[in-house]
Length: 271
Image 1: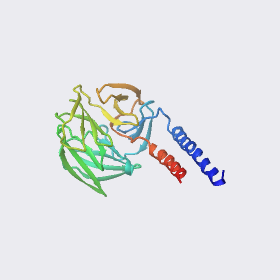
Image 2: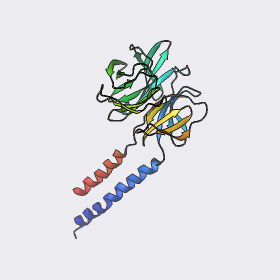
Image 3: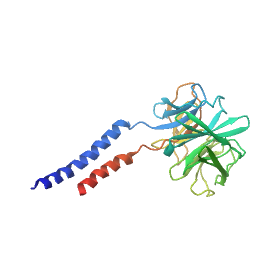
Image 4: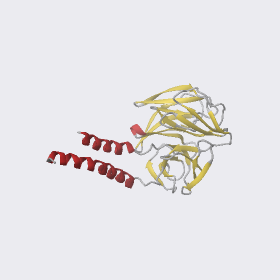
């Protein structure tokens, strides 16, 4: 066997080992049990926290100095992973301001002129979306643009008006809504399409997607949520004194990077 052939055979044998090693390193850095969501805390130690849905442990990830009023000070949290930016609505008196927060630095993007209370929020396809209390058949869409934003009202298929806990969307636009009238799903990729009723049981809690599914927070309790039935299962509790006005989803960790490196190894062996 030639030296070149020997090296080629070694590369073939080494590639799967490299991929396995990369996968092992990724797993070592991300414990299998770890699942997180973000929460906007209006209680002691105000700010945006990362919440471990298994243990209830919380870590402050961004300060929110403008939110000084407990309860109505801020709501409608959403996370834009592409720009590592949080968005939420700050209410001062009767005026609601659209806020961006990057690593604890807040920017007021402007006042929201559309009427209605914003107690829900999600980020999908470059836009911030909210369903306002009492306006369940329309969605408020805010589009960040530099130091400002544009706003629009679009139809959605929810059949009821209610007070909202929260909404949470997937990467495809499939969105779940938890409100006083029940638990529903609809798709932001096709505004106006009919919604699906999951359960009519009152579901006025905060929701967000973690790595493994949908989670809810009500008071200090954390639950996993069955998106087919709406049934919640207790998983953990946060520390007393925390009060989460709203949740935001954390995208699943980037296994694609590991697969990309493994693919690179595979590409090398094909040469």
